[in-house]
Image (cartoon, rainbow over all chains, first blue to last red; front, side, top):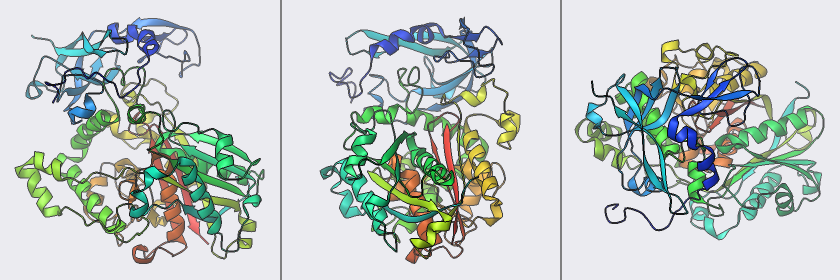
Length: 151
Length: 416
């Protein structure tokens, strides 16, 4: 189906570009938040700028490790016509959670450049930035994904 | 705790299969009004719309419905200038609106409060948004993830802790039970639809052709919905009906909505694994702490033990909910279902009205549909699906995806 229509001309959902722009550091470089008062790390970034731990509102950016290990994984079961709303041209993705050395877990996220049968819990992966889809204005959007680290 | 509170009216819009086929011909305003006047008509000794002192309603929220302003809803009900609070709390919204309606009566502020949970598929601004915006909108959604992907991950953890075969056998068992219940409930959306699967065939398919297993597995019914209750102080209940149902306890709890939060959330207010009776090395996505906390609090307020509860009228079959009620051991819910304990003659009949997937998944009305069934059961008016024991019922609902249910509302009701 999607070989015939790799990039649908219409979009069912409404995407708002300011959200992409605001969260670009997280999506490209895994930038979250660090509470300056208690030192806790937060992923995703604390958009509200309130630390649930100490209630401080004083934060700084923290770039998380770009390497981690697979905590859980599953083949995407969402039918292509539905999935196509978000990610054009790719079917049966490998959905996973990835644990970083800071202890933070990224989920859901996507494993690329490997087959399902090659994936194992604890497999080392590193962050890559790949194309997601086009925004309403035609620009390509990118986001983080994970690829196996070849020993 | 304030005043004791009773349910004296209950009802819903027409949920029958005939009405479902005409869902798109009616506005959400009509459906709210249909529910409101059905609830009023159910008050045995009568209640005039002018007697309603306050209204609490809810819908899914976010991109669900346009024009859902509080004033428009009161006007749709023909009840201006009555006060009204409009709540959005996703799939547990009507539990939260019930909670708030309860507190308004228990506090002594109002004596007659109308509560309605509602939702409409046909009037939403954007159907895709409604489906998607249940996860973290800043990351997951834009990275191409939505509710279904989180369900995929839930399967991963369910297979890990319950075993794949037991998880899917419990799923098949619950679907077959769903059809048993809906075919005894003329108000259910799937009423009259025969169950299309047999357990032995499905489990055999799982071994031989898993793709076919998934193809044959019946999906839930997505519908519009509007339903609710009238709450009054218990001391006034007999003025309105000879068979009131009493609200013994309510609770509502929230946890973060980021799906992976249980794996790393560093706030130590609670010892999260112990909250959920889970070994720390197994505390992850499938733990639903909000469910455990709201269930525990509602049961504590109601002064009931799990053994006292006869009915579970929750809209969703959440494994951890059965475990949080401690009717089965942790990671024992799949076996509990497989062994028939959620059937009408089992230890804890579950969703005797058909549940969200059989009655109709209406999001904002999911919890209140279960609550209406609890009232019907506790009054002994459930006909062919009447549970043999029906003194105490519990209703629990979840919404959001963080830790398999970021928000949870629970209530315990007792027959008069």
